Image 1 (cartoon, rainbow, N blue to C red):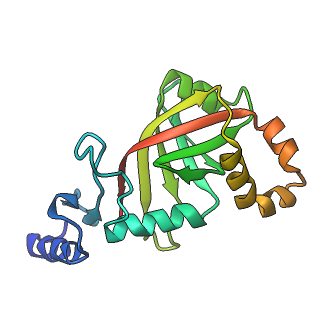
Image 2 (image 1 turned 90 degrees about the vertical axis):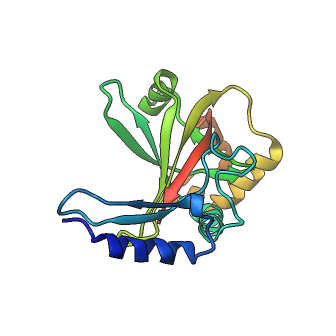
Length: 190
């Protein structure tokens, strides 16, 4: 059985005390046997066009921005031809409200994005399932190479990772030559 209404109200008050505006709080009563969830959410692009999806003015948005700057792996989930979600760990750069990802050519994720550009991006949670971050958005394959400043930032971020797989940055960008851009339009988590 789901949590009693009084418990949900208490969870919602706790979330609201996190200084998140009321329109960012969502309380879900789940089906019997499942826990209830209070999520602090940022705006979708269509809900609040003036508010960025990762709103660093909120406690949750600031935590997400810090994790996007610090973490090295993001799970990019595309939709396969049968409608099955296809998660893949990827290296990424978060900048100016957009993700930069590199891929090898002819990978299933490229075909999936060309067929259906809707994707989700997830950061790893804690061992107990906390600190969940899920972004949804639109991915696109772009022909234009990133600028030198973006390449430099990506290379610096993954210098240790490149060494660990025995690749130079030149080898990496030659092998992972497809540029993906993902523009998120929704962020949720707890």
